[in-house]
Image (cartoon, rainbow, N blue to C red; front, side):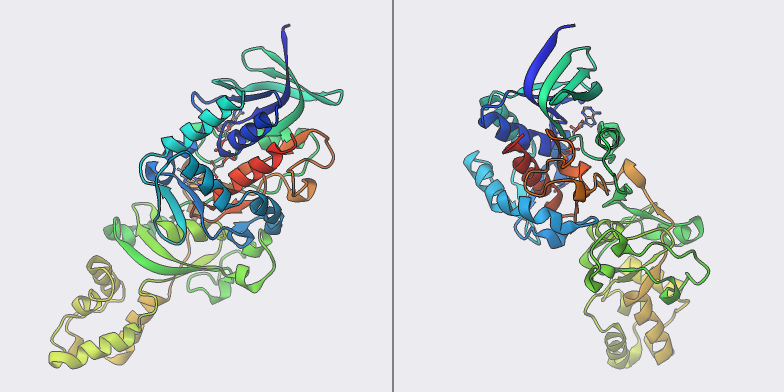
Length: 425
Ligand code: FDA
């Protein structure tokens, strides 16, 4: 069998794998990147609605989940969001800040893919798409792999950069996890994250008329079933900080972003964010008019014009009209403001700003933007992503048990961890 020899074999031509390949290639390493997808960087191409939210100006370890989010600190510092922005600027790619430090391309996400593939080509990296790995094993000081097309490859370094399980139809696999396990590494529990949440049929039916309604909310995880409205008989789920640090802040993270009612349940940035902390059996609490004293506003409206306005109309000045109508229907409140008492208005206030609801599940890997969990960080060197027990083996990007919030943090982790490994692999 014809054997090809490289210094570095990188499996996965996503954000992390390409960044790693560029850096290793620039160091003069002979680098082969294989990806079973037809094109490199497919997730970059579709990300951010086609505009790629490529980083976040505020990136820091606090924006990540995992057994030990602080593991990310070193790589994030060594190749920061500012370093990536410099590369985007050097490539002449126009960008803008959308919100909350999130940087997007002005034009197409394809420009980021092109920037990376051009840099790989300049660094002499060999890229083979449509090619998977049939087998890989330790061979002497290095590794021996057989690619899906039968080519045998020898390399001194092997980089697992094949990402997580999210969006299998785009080629996502558990290959990195399986391979890491085969090399004796521990992989933490993996689950879909940054994903819409779903509801049981009965509740969903009541919410269906709201499908398409978007509202700015504050949402928090409500891990203690006793304090939730519908949870007294529910099984107690893992507390969210099982995946995160033990600080009280992480225990009940709060996100202030948009929420969208869908035909399946709830989506939108606020829900995707909280989904990373939510566990089966837990509730979430949503404030749909954050910072607004709904009771005071309704009372004031009742005092105007003799309280002639319909309750749902008055509420419709505080939250979207369809939501106001639905809330009034759910709380069985109708008629004019003048006809309702203080207790009823308090109920409406609670329905708006203290909606506690228990999802039954999520849409799963089919739509999840990322996979929570992955190769345990205590087995990796935080400066280089090298596996401590297997010289020459590296794990980078989403395959590692480091998961970012929504907002460009996951790509930044991919760039930073890929860069870090690329300095040594
Ligand atoms: P990534 O998944 O990018 O790359 C892995 C590569 O390995 C893929 O090309 C895959 O084909 C290949 N592969 C998998 N298994 C293989 C195998 N067995 N053999 C060979 N190749 C294999 N993040 C962000 O910061 N900003 C954003 O705007 C978005 N938007 C977004 C939208 C959508 C729809 C999704 C699904 C995800 C995002 N993300 C995001 C998350 C972001 O895409 C993700 O965190 C990074 O792509 C992870 O980079 P990696 O290189 O680690 O994996």
